[in-house]
Length: 274
Image (tube, rainbow, N blue to C red; front, side, top):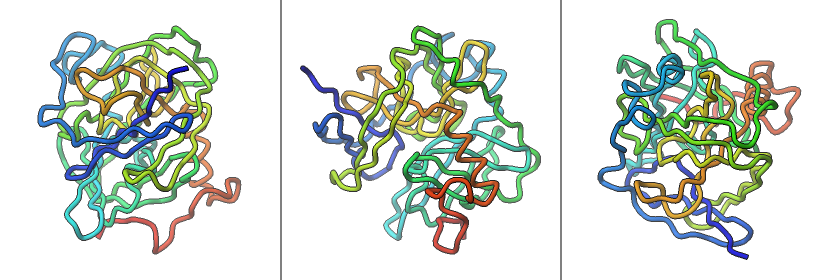
């Protein structure tokens, strides 16, 4: 039986793609394309040409960049606004190892951010944007109602280039998927479970972005993609963390982490802006 490779989708400018394992098969990474953005169409393109439910919620989507170590490496991803006060949900792998984090809000203003907490096992992190005016939260739905065949749209920061959110329409193809993700050296495996699989194209930089349903509600968080490193010719198999699980981690962090032992509470060792 053929085994698909799974590729994590936070961009790492100047680095190879993280390598991901599926059923024991590793897939080598390659650098990002010089032209990673897709052409806009009514159902697949930057937010201005998107379906109405997508346009209605893009104010709740932000771009995230993390400066990793002293090498000048920049990791780019996406986030979702949780509260008007600037709490932002994203993947842990987007900000892992970052010494400085910047969040670009709708309208193009950039702000520093710090990590409130993260659950590496669930690949979920909660950030706090510092000094921003009131933000518009994303509209969160109920991932327990998602069914195979449902229409969905993946929204994110494809290619890590910023600007209007990129979108890709598709359907839910499977539920309750499990994958194993490693770093670019095949180390530090992370096992993710109960994922939503979709044929909406998910690309580098989309990590942490919303997977929304036909009504414009967030039902998942874009996290990984299958096949070769994502791009115009990629096999469109993407994976999203169900939003119910991601928000459970958020609530545990907001409550101090007491109900979720895997959640790292705020500490001087957590990545933060300087």
